[in-house]
Length: 254
Image 1 (cartoon, rainbow, N blue to C red):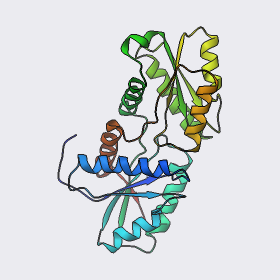
Image 2: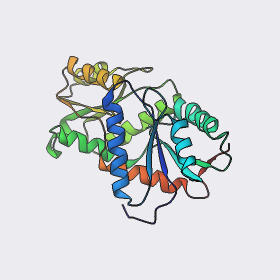
Image 3: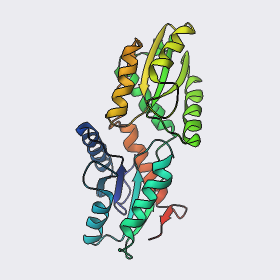
Image 4: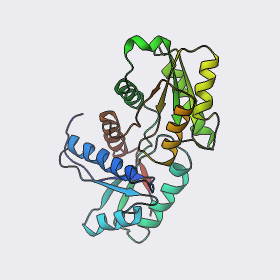
């Protein structure tokens, strides 16, 4: 990652969770982004459960004299939160702030950098290059009822399998099937000797815990950590930020 001149503040918009590990992970990722781009103001906000809320963060930026902001949804797929919740909350937050322009960056996925982060976490969990051809991977996602999001996850699994894994199968902690334990058992039934579960989620919380529980109950050989504040994610956030600053960036009209 380079270090061009700092631009407008980056406002990370995360989902939020009652689990304190979630906010801690979001803040750690924001810190890594800020360290990678000296001079860039990086703020965090949450849709629910945690402070500051998106409106609180927007008002604070406006009160500091900021006139241009890039809001970045901390989401892996373009589902309901990206299509409805975040645009609505940003419109509402800026309705009384006509001098503040908020451009919204694209969601994080899909991206080769996310696959690289998944690979990093699997290595940290103990897998080596020698294990690749004999290992089936369960790409375990939070889940969504949005067919576009499901299609994206299916596509990621197909592309990732072509990199040399024995198999890569998607699984979901909610909204869609199969569940993590079902995907692990299906791979076993197909004769896959070693099964690893790779959580395709950013921060710990209720659904990631459900993924981990399913992996353990089904006897997966390897359970990788969540993506967390991986350097690949920090680089991806900055790429999405830079893209949003281009003329084709998405402008939220107050």
